[in-house]
Amino acid sequence: MFHRADRFFPFPAALALLAVVPLACVEMPGDDPGDIPAYTYRVVNSFPHDPEAFTQGLAFEDGFFYEGTGLRERSSLRQVVPETGAVTRMVTLEDDYFGEGIAIVGDRIIQLTWRSQVGFVYDKRTFERIGQFTYSTEGWGLTYDGERLIMSDGSSSLYFLDPDTFERTGQLQVTGPAGPVTRLNELEYIDGEIYANIWRTDRIARIDPDTGDVRAWVELEGLPAPEDRSGGEDVLNGIACDPAANRLFVTGKLWPRVYEIELVEME
Image (tube, rainbow, N blue to C red; front, side, top):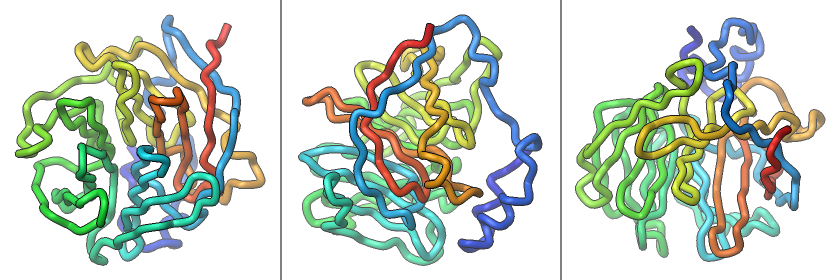
């Protein structure tokens, strides 16, 4: 099995390594969608995105994107104007940290790191770091359902954390028709479901937060346009929603655009 080996190497060596790894060697979880609903998409709008941003987490609130980026010596937390892509506020992580998923909890932003087993807490308004916490797994994706933080670690498990103490309060195994769905990455909680990017695929799983069952697949093949792909690690990774306006956004690592999409059920 391929183990995110890109992360052991500095950018761009990581991309060079991935370029020589045959895709056939990479396990693609959930290749059999089974007899559950599947959706494709219609692009409603698109917005500029920093093509140097190795997107690990994306959220939308108060008219801004909030984005966590990765790679050692390149990791950051950003506030971004959607219409222009302008970064209006940014803090960088110390060089030995590899930034991962983010979640907004009230007036705080929570950010994971990959293998350091440390998460950081920021004041949402100032981006001042106001706390940190530890966890026992890798950190990949993070979201908030209004009561609990939900965290992925690249396996088929999701973990529930208390948003104040960061203690683990529960665990969920995600399964589809073909069995456990692994490589759960960036997360977003939308209308009572957990949306999860499946790493190194163009697929999002829509997960029942009570049972762990995949309720539906979202197939995003074709994003971004072929001319906007650089190869290697520029994969789908970034889901955000604007519940007030019923808008859904997706992007990926090193993508030049963030896409607002509408889901269309497949026949």
